[in-house]
Length: 403
Image 1 (cartoon, rainbow, N blue to C red):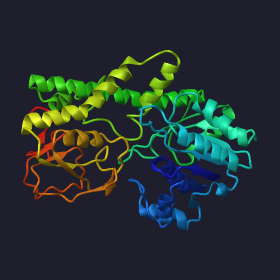
Image 2: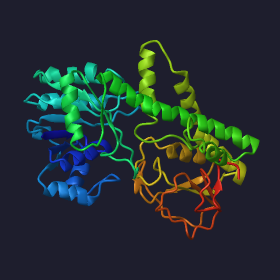
Image 3: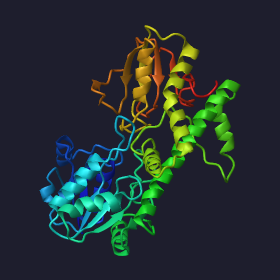
């Protein structure tokens, strides 16, 4: 099949490589010239896809990365995989998705199956994407939705063995999309409508969002009681049914978990409703950076004038993704307490307009937010505090569990 994938980030590049592996011809479109030039030179920018994978796809002649929508080349399938972030007010921002849909509509000269992988509230495919495309390209296109389930850094589940959910505005669109995904995915699940598929993605990550808020609150209670929360969680998870372990953290980051529940909440408010669970969990999770810094002060002492180096500014271990990372709030709070702050992350070269600092052995203390496997603190003699107990480094003092 001739496939065009709009967006070549974590989601779009993953789908592009999956489609190429199945023998499809893929044009990967992204407006970032830096990203496209990297791909054209055989450089991957995401974990789980190697430079060799990119070079192999390029050399096969089945993959063309470009910023030119004019190279859609009459695709049979167009996959839209662009970000749907929050704006500066913490509200859903669909501008990138709208722009992509508008550009696709203006470029298409043939009937195609349009598949959205971008996460949004139920009704987005039917009421936003389709009208935007058909306003410029009234060719009776087919429309389907398969919300992305990419988990950066997950070594167990990837594109092939993570089940896909597919819904369509028509049965024909759904079935054709299922046929496409089955060519490179082991399991594809049919949904009765596009809205069911869209809502399923929001439920998945709202579940995680709320349970992370629960365990963050539970951990604070355990700390006050002098009980190690990590040991309580380990004990509870021995139950073989009815319990799923979640772990406390400095906050929620990434492209999905901190964002998707807000899309659900925004849609609920349009209907005159509100999820009290989402609102409360958002409040608890947003307060965690302050709680972490307060714990640091209670265990170490006044930070005014102290040199603090923060380690790990991406949102999770062993990935370079800094989207929605809670490290940003932590650094701001540390500075507000008078600390002199630097940061180091072996996976992140630059962030927030700053270049990473080398590991500085002259600082007064270190704060590990994310313990990447590549993080090397072997010559670091200052006290080190970390978010959770780390068996590899028993001398690191945990902030979110009594020890």
